Image (cartoon, rainbow, N blue to C red; front, side, top):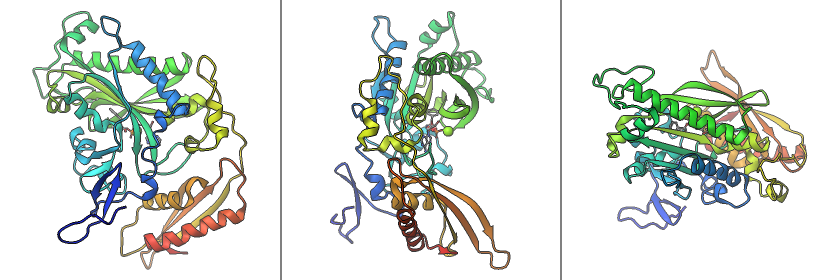
Length: 415
Ligand code: FA5
Ligand code: MG
């Protein structure tokens, strides 16, 4: 954080990311800890499991979609800066002004106009404007979210787009297809009003088939999956794909038919297309049997070394160096009356001061005092070091620090 930034009125503080400075305002909520993740680029680091897994997806898109001369038709982008405008992250994707994802409690803002992308879809409109039809963007994304084995405030996504010209649709279908519907009010759960039922079906089908082929190519034919209806402001119809891993359903990706308005605004109003966004960790975890999302940030050679000299099929099973015991401590406090409190503020604070020791934070009890109206929350914090046994004394020290910081920063009162 740079305070030297000169201004004619008062010295305003600014946040510096990648050599560029952003003047702080009432929106600024990035922390030094979050900013320290920027530039790590695990997805581009040679030998890192996210990079190895990314390469499998890239290979799929290169092999599966080829032009008439046999060249790959998908372009890959993996070095786009994670700082985006709120316009790119939200407005260009038709996210309503009052959508909860815009709240300071859910996203990381540099200031009112700039933020850390909350999804790689943030680049969609810009790339389509540049004239691209088929592309996949890989990148790190940032969200204020809960902490557990499959959620982390920084993770990686792959976001794909495939846009069809009327001719291409015809090629897939075999006969002439009307892309548009003459009756523009003909919108329903299954399709957007502007598009014909036929075109919508071809594109939806193509989308689902592509993603299932991709999942099967990566995990093998026997992978169990299911489709679930979803809602995204930027696609309709929208779906989620879940895969079954060891009896557990894991949400792998969201997808759908791109809203026509987005294409129109990007200069591709005569087209129809699909888009998806998947969590790289969510797929790499079952693929390599990695039990905890924090391991992707491990600097321990015991973790990274296991991904050297992979077998020819690229698949290997991560062997936990050993499982160390958990330490569980609860914390109960009264919420401040004077200011807003949200659980994500507390989760983030625990992440900041507990760091890699925190395996999970969960709200386990809430209580409203019948007379005073005061509200209290009880959170359970599960501590576990991934690479050694923690002593109760070490945990107590960190837990104490979290209690002190929660009191100072969030204004809660310990019970
Ligand atoms: C999105 O981010 C949409 N942009 C996806 C999309 C793109 C839909 C294009 C339609 C068209 P969602 O918030 O569900 O959707 O996140 C997408 C995926 O990211 C999830 O399915 C999951 O695999 C992964 N993910 C979400 N939150 C986390 C987290 N905290 N930690 C790790 N992975 C996560
Ligand atoms: Mg989702």
